[in-house]
Length: 508
Image (cartoon, rainbow, N blue to C red; front, side, top):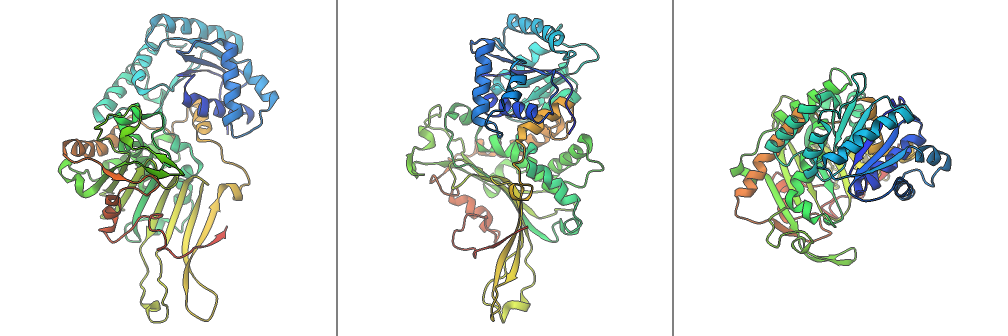
């Protein structure tokens, strides 16, 4: 990987949880790996009142707790510490931005950052517009031979109209090639490996279509509740918070056609084609293709958990879903008539993110007379988290005189294969933004096309008089989610305990 050019990285919301848990450790690991230029400096901007030294102490504490490479390397920390600065400010204050604008040229001169800027908006989404407007004011831009890039955290809007408005505002001040809409799932190694698995292995391409694949499941399950995010979550819900970005991104990578090149333009062109091919669900038909749930009170792990409606910041009569399941179809030549099942939720049985590609069952005539054990369909499981890797489930004969069949899992795990922990997603994405590579970021039309899929569902839910179906904490969601897939003669992975035969694991 190339060493990123020098720049001044300005983090808005620098005292927040995202910066502390993700951004600061990622920056430290980039410095440790030698991928960040020694002249690059870092400026935190937030409302919290603190000095440079206090801010540096906060960074050290965050690195000590959350970096993937612990303990702290004192040599690396010493090199980084001298390039960390803090500017207290209100996000809407012209005077505070003026002080920041005065500060940055002095850092250019001191460190040699050449006027290059990377602005990271790690604030609540309500602050995005005012920050963008302040950054776009006259006198805030850098020299003609320097870059000014902006990273926008999710959520990017809350519907199609707001996403379009945000894009218009951004394009007023920044060209599209300087805008980096981030979805950290795209920085995960397994997600990136989807392209390699599909297009660098000839065994998959001939069978990667509706003729051989029965359906695809995408699951993003969380074992925790809304925690202290009740105020935000009650305005968003599971569909907006996870499905519109993470899950549709995974779906696009599974369903896209081969790009003409491994560059940002080609890959994102193919992803947009997938979104535009998704059959829109009419608001009146959402009950046939979607399920929404809301966790109730119950005993879980092992403490008593309170219902979503009792969470801090949540309205007592809230109809916001904490679980969503959707059945989608991609109306193109490759996927005609084949369903994609998506589900996500809070307080589910376990934390996992994965894609399951289930292939059609082989003809069973050969085994019906001699074999009493069932013949299982083949599954390709792409595990995003935890334990990133890929598992290929085949059928094999159990040793012995009888014809007994059991599934055999051929597993590829990053940790055991490469004997190292994969880089954190934010490391890759921050580095890519520094070098100007937009491949793993979301383009303007891509964000809008994804919202065009979600908006009719949200409209149908808003018009319906029903409330989300309650489900028990520690379960796999409401019963309606089971019916959504079982009515088609299929079932979710991980939800039918005791039905699957034990799988014999063979590590590759």
